Length: 448
Ligand SMILES: Cc1cc2nc3c(=O)[nH]c(=O)nc-3n(C[C@H](O)[C@H](O)[C@H](O)COP(=O)(O)O)c2cc1C
Image 1 (cartoon, protein in one colour):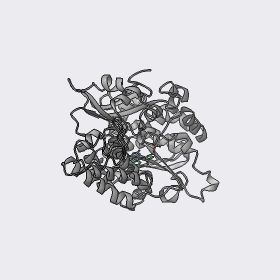
Image 2 (cartoon, rainbow, N blue to C red):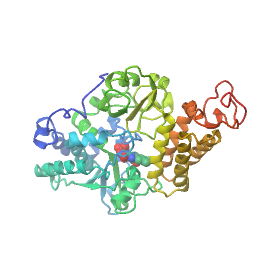
Image 3 (spheres, rainbow, N blue to C red):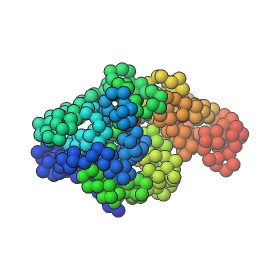
Image 4 (cartoon, protein in one colour):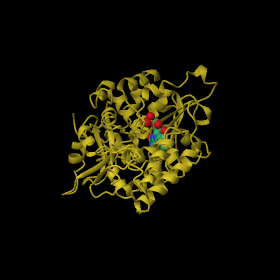
């Protein structure tokens, strides 16, 4: 297992690799001609066989999703669309921005191949509002690729048409959620819709639409060019391939890394990411973007970086691969308050539990941070999070609830140490392991 393979990042260190002439000298657009000679179903099969799982967060198998697009006779004459999710608004996640900036031709080639595979003649790249500078670079790359005949009508004389458009959002985190993204793309408010119907059946303009992340599209290029078996030489049985991780926080070498899935998490943090500052101890890690549950140092020491291990060891998720490392100088009460300020601000407001609950959680955490809360507030906080998770149209509610639930559960001292103790609330009331026989609602060790 290689610590730092170079599948998606192979051209990142080459100067000017965003220019098509430079990129083509190093393999860009070399897969497309062969792909166009394959039947669309063959490409889908290769992607299925590779075991590629969507890199936007949920890890859903990409080839399987493509298979949900109804056949032409069941589409009521509607077209199929491909939408590349380049919203990347999850705090701690910044790998797609790098991928698009350093080597836009890698994911553009994947977009054209994927569009051909699913029968889409139009592909949209939806970028978050703050990515204007990235959009300009991607637009330049699209123009270069069009001039070479890789994008547009009758690509390389194959009779296949694929047009690629960029679309800039207005800077809303919720527009990363696929149904909100599609509403925004249609020019409506960026608010999620209930699923089903899933976008693959009824998406943009009510037509079948495949939504895939930027990194997923880049991986498709490599997989179709090298084959499913070659891809499976990386990673684990259930999490094949490589993954981009964006690492921030208290490591000496923050940045974006490509890793072979299945490597030990602690080795990655301590070696590849440069380790902690001298004299510091690891306090906690958020492994997959701000919304996934937090991990303790003990869990980090037992986990490998793949979808299965992280969940089995800690109940957390690999998510988007946005890893936030915190050392022992971190004030978790302040950190959680900061996170909830973000979620309260970004809630789209459709669902009452999320609209009201995120702001309420933030206000409590602000009081905790400022030393103006009691232990009863902590129990309320847990109760609120429990009543938001899974009770909203989309997963945003859960995304705001999971940090609250997991930070309280795994680091109760950080919060109990910051509030006035009434004796009415114990560790178990916030979902935490009772230290020394703590009981809910009793005079407990925690309350002493
Ligand atoms: C609140 C929320 C925000 C999301 N933000 C993003 C995002 O910024 N980028 C992304 O690719 N997926 C994001 N997703 C996941 C998308 O809904 C969708 O699953 C993904 O784009 C599918 O692509 P994939 O299968 O290639 O991962 C988000 C989901 C939720 C619930």
